[in-house]
Length: 172
Image (cartoon, rainbow, N blue to C red; front, top):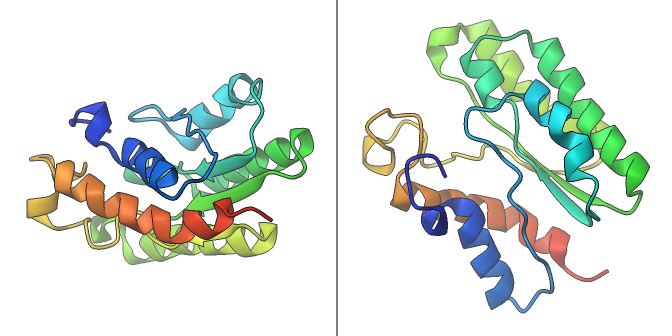
């Protein structure tokens, strides 16, 4: 929710959608603005101290914006998935994919996007193909930095997330 009130950020909007759908889930936002996949991995033990029935894994965009090696990002995300499943074998996982701006080069941009599809397929987890679909690159939906969504952008991100997350949260 960088740059917007936490109640307007997409995680809060997802909790509203959960409530409106009458589902018994409580969302815990363990994200940190500016965090990398390595930072998320370092915090994982702290996160896993509480029971985790579902994990929405949204990490790696800051890795890409910094041009970090893709194999490190892939390894970090894979490790998060493996360690979460090791502790909570019945966990439901959704991976939020990202895309990078073209200025990082065609090869890096293409490989970054593919990384999420490959991880989702390998681990048989649900995939949000592009978290910022319909928001990224649209000035009217972003803060002046043109990186972070504004309030309306967060509404649209919540819609993107909910399309994939809602079926995952349904009772089995």
